[in-house]
Structures are given as C-alpha cells and as structure tokens.
Image (cartoon, rainbow, N blue to C red; front, top):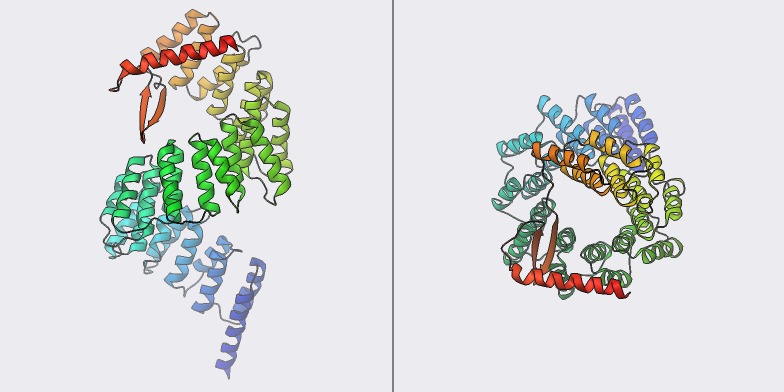
Length: 498
C-alpha cells in the first residue's frame, strides 16, 4: 500500500512537471516533491534540472542549486546544466560545472564534451578547452564525429586555425557539419583562400554543400568584397535549386551590398517572399554605406509602415549612417531617441559613434563633443578618433578648442597609436604650426612608430590584388600609373565643366 502511494505521488509530480510553464510553478512542484519525501528520486531530480536548465523558462541558478544539493544525480543531469550554461551569457559557469563533475567522480561522456567545448569557445577559455581536448583523447572519444565537430568549432573560435584544421584533417568520419565547421573556422580567421579550398575539396569528396555552407561562403565573400566569387556561388545556388529562404536570401543581400553591387542586392531583396528584420537591416545598411541615404530612409519607413517587423540595433545603425551621409542632423537625433524610448533598444557604442559621425560630418563639432561628454557609457578611442578626424576637416585652426580637447583625450587613451599621431601632425601642418607637426613626427620616428600603409584592393578576373601606399609591388606599374593619371585628369575636367 505504501509503495502504491509512493508511485502515485511520483506520477502526480511527473504529470505536473510536464504541464509546468514557469519557474514559480516549478518551485511549487519542487516543494511538493520534498514534502512527499521524493527529493532524492534521480528521475524527478533530472526532470527538475531539465526544466530549469534547457526549457524556454530556464533558471540556471535554480538548476545549479538543485544539483549541488542532490545526493543522487546522474551524469546526464550535469550534462543538461553544462548545456544550459554553454548557451547563456555566462558560459564560464559551464566550465565550473565540468570541474565539479570531475571532483565528484562522475563519468563524462560524448554528450558532456560538445557543450563543454562550446562553453570554452564562448568564454574564450583556450587552456580549459585544451584540457577538455586532453580528456576527450583520454576517454577514447576523439573518434566521435559530434565531439570532433565541436573541437573544430572551438579551435576556430579561439583563433587557433592550425589546430582546427589538424583536428578536421585527421577525422576518420566527416559529415556536412564537419565541413561547415572547418570552413567557418577559416572565414572567421580571415583565411578566405583556405575556406575556398575546403569548399572545393568538400565537393570533390562527394559532399553536397547545404544551405548553411552557402550562407558561410556568402559571408566570406561579403567580408572580403569578392563579388565575382559571390556571383559564382549564387549561380550554384540557382543550379542546385536551393530555395531562396530567409537565411539564404539575407546572406545574398548582404554579400551583394557589401561587395558594391547595391543594385543587385536590391533586386534580390525585392524578389524575396519572406523577409525578417535582418533582411531589411542588411538592405538599409547597404544603401546607407554606399551613399544612397534617401533610399535607405525610404526603405526604413516602408518597413515600419508595411510590415509587422520591428527594427533592431543593426537597422538603426543603417538609419544613422544614412542620416550621416545626407547631413540630416535633426533626423539623426530623432531616430537616436526613438531607438531607445520608442523601440526599447539600448544604444551601443557603435550607435554613439554613428551619432558623433552625423554631427561631425555636419561640422557641428561642439555639439559632437557635448554629446560624447554626456554619454552614459565610457567613450572609446574610436569615438574620439571620429571626432578628431571631423575637427581636421571642419576646423583646422581649432578656434573653439574642441580639437585640442579631443586630441589630448585620445592621446591619453592611445599614446602610441601611430594613426592618432599622424592625424595630429597633419592638423598642426594644416594650421601652419610646423614646429609642432615636426615634433610629433620626430616623436614617432624616435619611438619607432610607423603608420600602417594605406591599402586598396582591386578585383580582376576573380583574383583580388592589394595595393599599398608607397610600395611598388610586382605588378606592371608601367601601365597602371599612366591610366591613373588619365583618370585623375578626367575627374578634374568633369569638376571644371560641371
């Protein structure tokens, strides 16, 4: 009779756990479990931890306390907590949970390590990740494809591309996910040629790139501005009949916009049947960054009027960028305020920087300085450098002393950054303060500081050629310089007759 009562209470608690929809409800069920003397039942503890670790209503602190105070927990229960922390804003706690498992002598398995590696990647804990890798080898799990895929991802996120490639190349079994992981690692570490090499090899090994593969490759083309490669990949998407869904379409819009073909980005955007906030934001930002401020703002208004999609932080970055290019200071202020007080989006450093650019481009240097000084967050060197560049254009003689204040603050933050010193030296030279300009140049020379050479890229016949200021490369300069002189003369003539 007592046993039947025990089973009945356990069954009731399990039913309640299945119906649970909040942490408050969970705590009530937990109290009932304790009252019913079922608090050491491993299955019920597992269900409590599962809900508080990986459900939409999770509370990781609650799950943590449940496990720490449990005398009858199983490895799978700890795995759930590691998984929960790995996907949270505090992934370093997952590493602590893994160490606690070791202390308690709990067996780690192939479901433990993938999320532990994800946590190490998120927490930028390279040494902890290497220890996890050692455990994986020790326990003979280095031939599990799921574990190895996460190892590739971890080393890629940790900027250890050689280690990521080594793990991948030594894998006995590979899946499409494996190839995507190593291609992503190459892209995130700015090795576009390696990424392309693995993409080609993937097909040679009989693996068909999936939607995720193509999104990764489009992102790499966008990052490096390789329009011809992007077009070739787009052709493959069409030939393979991959549907232009939201994720793939957004990657295409972003690629074409960042590679300079805003017109085609707009065509892809208009043809997409399904769009999300990232699609709209990519197109708005693409228009804005290429000087099409009117089109960017019109598209933003259209998004707000004709769709149920709400803007996000990237959307407003595009809007502020458009205001900057169009000189719309009042609109910039209005959108900046609406972002926080209407849409509930807290401005990030990049938004403050965009607003400083709006004011700086318009020559409103005092307003920009006041704006920075009133920021609720500490202004970073990028903000001060943005304003100093504006001062060098609009107020060379520094009549209002804004430039001097900005210069002092920037050099306090980054006293040995050569780019800052070059801006300062140029400002002194423009103002005719030759002695001060010479002193800055002398300080750079004596300190061994050199400004990184200006760089430009040219894509020709599928290859990207880099040109550096003051450096004669191996290219045929005899043909380049006369063409450059002709183009310069042509631009001067257009300016003269316009």
